[in-house]
Image (cartoon, rainbow, N blue to C red; front, top):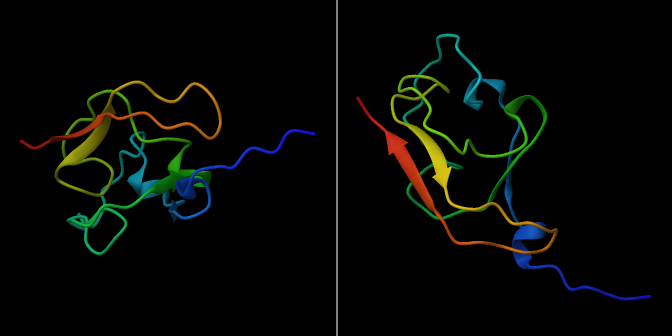
Length: 95
């Protein structure tokens, strides 16, 4: 048996299960201005699951969707295996 130590972000994260924060959500939201967390100014690991989808969008999301005015997406390469991380940039679309 091989034991693999997973990085902290595999167990220490904020869960996002909110359907209104999904890139596919097109209803009118409350425009929460990303406050409070998990999308505030403090760095945090966020796990997308359930109605929120499975990951942060990887292509431009039109502004004023996802219950916010400035939508975000990840520009980078997603990790290719469990327990690994990659560096990338989160970009925002603001009208």
